[in-house]
Image 1 (cartoon, rainbow, N blue to C red):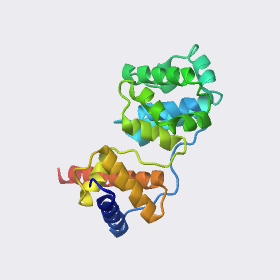
Image 2: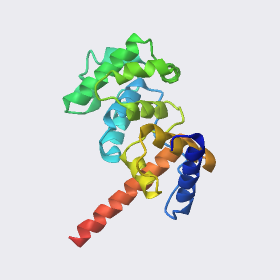
Image 3: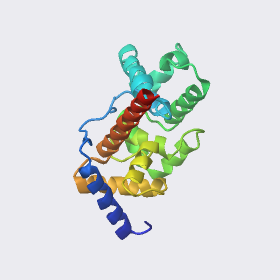
Length: 218
C-alpha cells in the first residue's frame, strides 16, 4: 500500500466492506463544534484511552453548562486563576491536568482565542509540531482536535485499526490507515469525520456486545 493505486484499491475494499455490514450505521452528526475553547481542549485531552460515553461526554456537558463564559482562551486562563484544573475538568489524575495546562499555555502563546482561530492554526502543518512537543499528544489527538473544530478527517485509534483488520487490511501504519479511511469516506460520499465516527461506534458496540456475551457464558 505504498502507491496511489493500491491505496485506492484498499479504499474500495474498505468501502465495500462497510456497505456489506447489516449493522453498520452511517452517522450524520458527531460531538464537537462547541465554540468553547475550554470544552474543546478538555474533550481532546480526556478522550485518549478513556470511555467516552461514561467518562468524557458528561464532563464536557458539565463544562458547557457550568462555565459557559470560558469560550475564549483568555477567559479560560482567567477562570483557572480562581478554579483549579482538577475542578474544571472534574478529574483527579495529574497527567491529563498537566497536559491541559500546557495546551492552554500554547494556545495563549500562539494567539489562539476562538475555535475559528484554532481551526485556522491547525490547518498550518508547521504548527502541529508545537502540539506534538507536549508529552502525551500524538497524531491521533491532533487529528481529534481537528475533528472537534470542524476539519473533516479521521483520527486513527485501536477501533479503526481493528475495523481495517476485519476488512482484510491489517498491518497499516497511522498514515496508511488514515489515507485509506479518508479515501473510503470519499467513495461512500461521506464526511471523513462522520465515517470515522461511524466506524468507531460500530466497533465500540461490537466490543460491548462481545463483552456481554462473554459474561453470559461465564
